[in-house]
Amino acid sequence: MNETLAETARPAATTLSGLRFSKGHGTGNDFVLVADPEGVHAISAEQVAQLCDRHRGIGGDGLIRAVPSRLLDEGRQVLAENPDAEWFMDYRNGDGSLSEMCGNGVRVFVHFLLAEGLAELPAGGSLTIGTRGGVKTIVRTGDGYAVDMGPWEFIFPDDAAARAMDSLVSADGLEVARPALSVSMGNPHTVVALAELSELQDTRLFTAPHVDPTPANGTNVEFVVPAEPLVHDGVGTVTMRVHERGVGETQSCGTGACAAAVAIRHWAGQGAPDAWQVKVPGGVVGVKFFTVAGGREHVELSGPATIVASGTLS
Image (cartoon, rainbow, N blue to C red; front, side, top):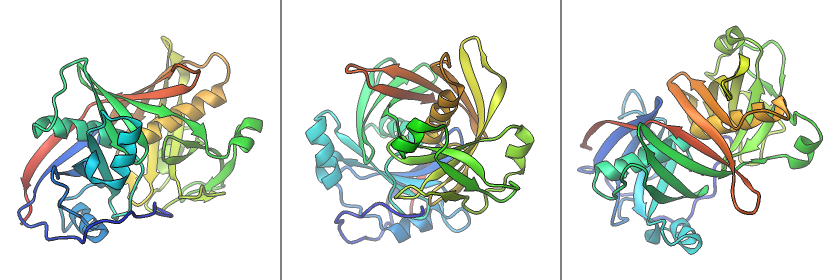
């Protein structure tokens, strides 16, 4: 993460020996998950980085702690907005830095709550979750979960309203800087459109792309290739790779998929569809746009969630 979110007061980190954990993923975007119903496991940034280390730890793009909202300052703020948000998704990037929200992560988080017996959610039912990116409502579908990600907005609204691009992105493997559009999904994203899949494959994301100007808290960067044709049977399709703050390249990014659909739909102009499929290295997720009361446009993200292992920290 180029800049991390401000830390709130937390209890001193304690030993994690004996703590149960699970490992899960959503289209390859993987997480270490721990349940903390009493709010007593203050996992430090250093401990998160150790657990997410793919060589010396469990390995993951981030760590998610399930904690009752009433036991966190951020959670109590969420409860003031929506008293149904019993559980809070305390999410950290793989380097230990705090993050606002993760679209794949919130699906896996809900799947974890169900597996641990901490919540119930029948098919078609919904569950309200607190995150640092606001309250999220998750619906259980036949093959996974759909999340109301809330409204999207341009990070640089004055620039975006006047023109299609608001920044330039340089990355290893691209000969020249490319124009981009910065979108907030509760966390920041900068979307770059490429012309060919070969360009996408040749872009090297071992190091963070350079974005000018960079949003205040850093940004995740998505490189996207529209399908040809872009729309088939009323559904738009794009292929995406992403470099996440504090993580590096990941197999998938839920909020990034939403931001990519926002940008491509914006560039496509009038008549662009509301339904999209976004192909990522880890699979395919769905993105839909819909209007809520008051006229604000929200984004829904849908896709699978899988728990692959559970164990106890030694």
